[in-house]
Image (cartoon, rainbow, N blue to C red):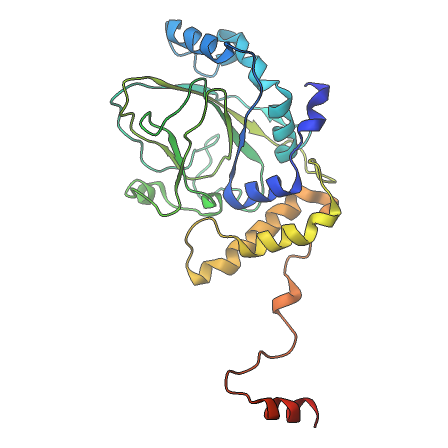
Length: 287
């Protein structure tokens, strides 16, 4: 691991955005021509190496060990994160059809066994070429890592309100919560879209934040966790969803944990009724 990753640690605002949305984009500075060389290597491969990507494509270590990537992974998974087996090279040729919405399975676990209030596993996706909207970009549903759905239900869904497409420039690295809802869209272009993905895991819980944390930011973090909703939720889901976000922060933050419930909306004077007059308010305030 590079020692100069510390200047690339995420800040509180970026961690909060990841907790809310479930993804973060890294733009590592790579040498001119690097992405093109990766694409050339992928085109010349006789077969897909499966999870043996690094052995078949040693140059990919430049991305895996880039300080910006290491800093983001350290921030989200702790300093002792590990790369898991199960990486894969995706080749999406022209005229391929879209995938159905899904959550990736992991080491045989069922769809009910999800980390809806923690960040324990991530998927890293590296794109060696520009991905335009007609090249089959990955579509994500922000915040869906906190939702559990049976696979047979998800495959019936098509476009979802709030979905976002990973239209990215060459060399971009997309980090997603492992449980986020996603799908590869159909490639309508005449170009192959390549993507190389690797899974990563947390190995220990944080004693303190593993990112660039400032305690003075806690009020702003709390406001965002309590108020932002990345996709349409029913009224009954709002309270549960923001509670899960606070629990996620606490599970990641160690000593920087915050109270699970905000007291601001639990007490204080009753709101004024619309029909109260100045005189009645004066009499009530001065009995």
